[in-house]
Image 1 (cartoon, rainbow, N blue to C red):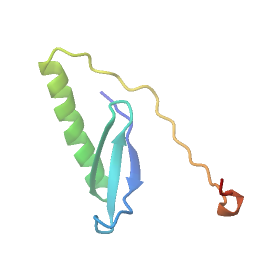
Image 2 (image 1 turned 45 degrees about the horizontal axis):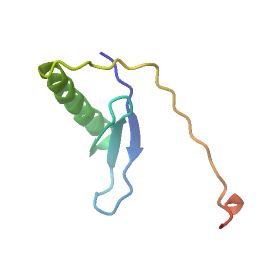
Image 3 (image 1 turned 180 degrees about the vertical axis):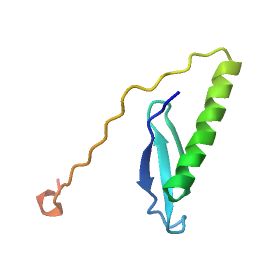
Image 4 (image 1 turned 90 degrees about the vertical axis):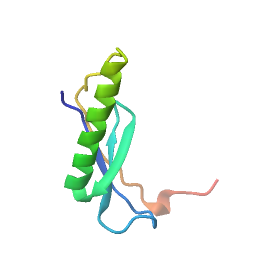
Length: 82
């Protein structure tokens, strides 16, 4: 099974530098780890647990469609207060 993962650098003060979130959009799961590889491994472990639980309960396991991602930059000068 292949699942798309979106990585996002964590910028919260609760985490030391170098940690990333790993989001699995199709499953609605998020985890984190140190660096991209750490976050990827944490996501892999979480997905395995999620799939095992679904199988144990006889539930359907969603298959991932193609995942596309992009960013949009908004100039702060263009943002007006309401």
